[in-house]
Amino acid sequence: MNNFMIGLKRFFTNKNVVTIILVIVILVVLYFGYSGSIKKQTNPVNMPTAAEKIAPKTKITNELIVYKQIPASMIDENAIRNITLIVDRYTNVNVTIPAGSLFYEEWLVDEDKLPGNWIEQLDYEKGELGYYMDVNVESTLGNNVLPDTYIDIYMKATDENGTVMFGKLMKNIKVLVVHDGSGNNVFDDTANIGSPSKIGFAVSQDYYILLKKAEYLNIDLVLAPRGATVPTDDYVIVTSSTLRDYIDAQTITVEEDVITGEVENPTGEETVEGNNNQQVVE
Image (cartoon, rainbow, N blue to C red; front, side, top):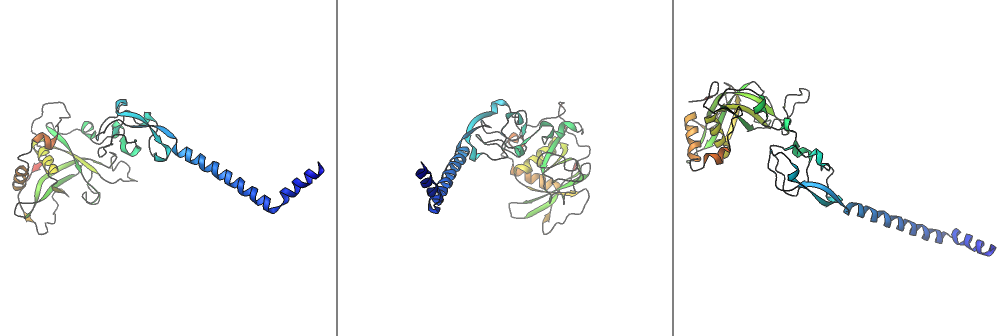
């Protein structure tokens, strides 16, 4: 027995033996650690995903959500895992969620933050329609288009002869709201003013359709403070009537509902033409 213990002691005090044992231990630890990590990354996680393509400004219901097993390594840390944080919310105004996609917080907004709800919250003249225009810091003159101020809308377009036309399309438009990309009012927090993404205002139905046609044609619209002088560069200055005729001619073969979509009167009353403040410039 003593000889055995002496031999065992010599075995473990041999530097070569100790080195081999340490190497084996390290390899075993690395093996099981790596295997555990791989298993953790490849194990599927039950995640809520879009059951179908979801359009912008759509209310998310249970029918639009389906659970799928997704490898953990493919799940972004910002993906929403809890279905209660998805149901009854809306896709943002500029977000389309592909079928099978995970849901992300930045894609969703609560109903009271949904861009466009300002139509129901603000009063304007009977017969007018709310229009929501894409903007950015540059087009709002360095974020200087403010709610309750008035703007003029200029238009730039190239005619069939290649002439660049420029003119004032509308004037005296009251800005009702300025939203950022998440639908929040840009100027709610004066200490942290956001970047503008949309401005909202109201116009008569005729002017609404005119703006929708310009939007359909991807025409360049330029904002300016009411009555301000706008640089005209080398453009040919034309009247509002010329600009309107150009827009109508370019869309004459397109059905109006294709251009405008369904025009809803937020008041629920019969829509009539109204134009108390906004004016098309002649």
